[in-house]
Amino acid sequence: MSRRKRLPTEPLELTIESLAHDGRGVARVDGKAVFVHGALPGERVRARITRRRRDLDEGITLEVLTASSERVEPGCEFYDRCGGCSLQHLDPARQIEAKQTMVLENLRRIGKVTPAQVLAPVTGPLWGYRHKARLAVRNVRGKGRVLVGFRERQSPYVADMTHCEVLHPSVGRLLVPLSELIGRLSIRNRIPQIEVAVGDALVVLVFRVLDPPSAADEQQLRAFADKHEIEIHLQPGGPESVNPLGESQGDLYYSLPAQKLRLAFGPLDFTQVNHALNCELVIQALQRLAPTPQERVLDLFCGLGNFSLPLARQAREVLGVEGDEALVARARANAEANAIDNARFATADLHDAAALERAAWLRERFDAVLIDPPRSGAREILPALAAMGHPRLLYVSCHPATLARDAGLLVHEHGYALRELGVLDMFPHTAHVESMALFEQDTGK
Image (cartoon, rainbow, N blue to C red; front, side):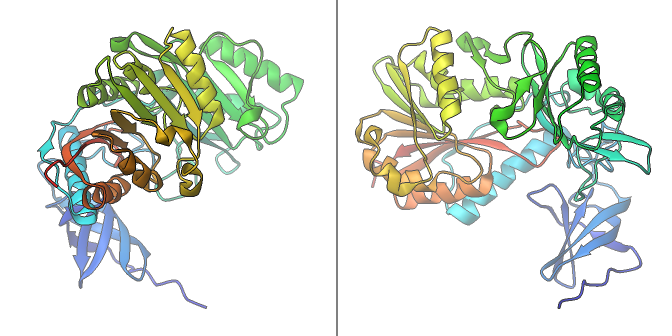
């Protein structure tokens, strides 16, 4: 039985050498890496070690002895305890530069590839940008009240916070009222989380309920929704169990103004958290692929049509493929609602290489392809795409390591060249980064 390593009783003075992929500063003590929250490269800090592992230690900054010129005052008073953000102490312009450097370093180190051109980062709103979130809920008897918010940094506990600066203001200002509401309910101990979904004209909060609310509970929930002009849904089971409490007030949707599109979505559907940056993401994708009215485009991991429908505005035809049948149904409905008749959709598990061998659509001819996979990447589908011979392939990624892995496969095994790489600050003040990589068939090989 292994024993937990004893932590130092005294703080350490550390010199921070670099920034880790998760936004923590990295120092070294006797050759061992120490990851320190709240520290920036070039700084000298006093830090407390909070965890020891065989290959690295973890710590938190207690005092900045020598500050970086890029250090700024965090914009949220709860930043020191809340785990929702990790980079508020770093100048926003430097945040996206650091993320771009991280993506390029992953491409070089993991994929052994370098883009021919690096595009200028795309930035947007720094505060109030989160339209989707999952808030934790906990009735803390020691505090005599319910806590609603993000979890504490590297902790299962809910952060004690009264508001959130990165959540959309319609929800960020409701943490205390939500705490007071849930504290009055008979099921206050049976609500573990609230899903947030903010559309252009409607705000939906999905309460995960482990026990059914009483009639009095439902009356209070309805009154709260009316007062704050939101819609409350209840989720007693899986995602399919979500239903509005009372009559729905309207449609949950977001717009893509440049393409004159309105996309409906369910409160638990995947959508980008930052609507303003999503609009820029779509514009960038259209510019990179530049489909003509004579071309056919394949959109993989298409979701509810975020890229498929804008592409259909320019291309002759678009085929969107997605593994979630409910999202495919949503995409078809969005196409119909926007009077788009040149986009069709299919359901397929894009991570099942064996099943993909039988997919009829993989025997069709397309002029370009867009891939927007989850964090796990798109490794399984790449051989089939390469065999189809798409001249242009745009890869939208939310995870630098899997992008780098797949980029290496496309370049070194499937005859593509990485022409352009761009990053978008979809998640300001966090270490998450959205990137877009344009690959073209390398005719020189």
